[in-house]
Image (tube, rainbow, N blue to C red; front, side):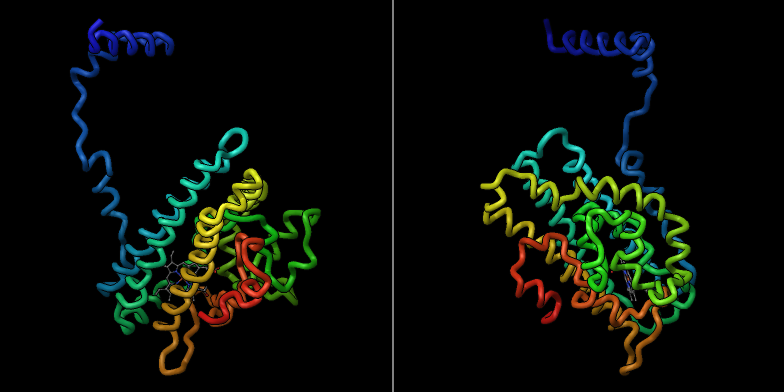
Length: 308
Ligand code: HEM
């Protein structure tokens, strides 16, 4: 049987199994258009997604770089999802390959941050940002999903409340003490800022569902379920530490330094569009967000973010 007729037979079987008329599908091939690059990649749609709120040219850099970040966040989540949903126990090589991909995406996010840090005129930035209040990058839902998917919820709890929360704490209560609540919540009164309120109206239900699933399917839990000798593998441990450090120190510091560059002018700290106490909130030494705590020494944990 020639390879052509073999494929035709396979196609016939495929459509038969679906209860479809094979001849109609074959005829459809006679009339269908050939694919082009621009239809497949959706170039026109993609390049039409940048809408400025001012006429200042550097606002375009700001919008496009955020969109690039969101695309890379989606790529990170895509890989983690495959690890999380893999049937049975995760194989070492599969886990290591996915972790390396995820790390590469975050390396790109971190090394490219100078596009923000140095790529816009301070004067222009401080003009167009006034049209963006009260929105903030804080409201990037995918960033929150990456955190939930990378580690157990306990490691995302505000350092000040961590000792009071354990596995039996109701999820909703734990959620109220996630480290990022500090950007918009007065813990004494429980009152939330507009930034946080509007963010939660849009995403809280999704976050709770997602976080509950990932509390037992995240990268850290998956790593811990690997065979004992694999967990001792130096290269794998180095890759895990690299990812943790890149997300929670390098990216955070690149971001913090950028905020300082644009918002800290002549020693005067400007209020951020989201209204957080950002000089404190954004620094890793206060956030102490660490995805894989057992892979760091006591000293490293204690000094997290101090000398950067
Ligand atoms: C000129 C560039 C930027 C400045 C000045 C800046 C400033 C800030 C500030 C001050 C905050 C604290 C919340 C607030 O009060 O608004 C924040 C949070 C945040 N921004 Fe940016 N940002 C910039 C670029 C970006 C980019 C490119 C992204 C990528 C999506 C991003 C994502 C985030 C995220 C995820 C948070 C929450 C971080 C956390 O909770 O630890 N930002 N940003």
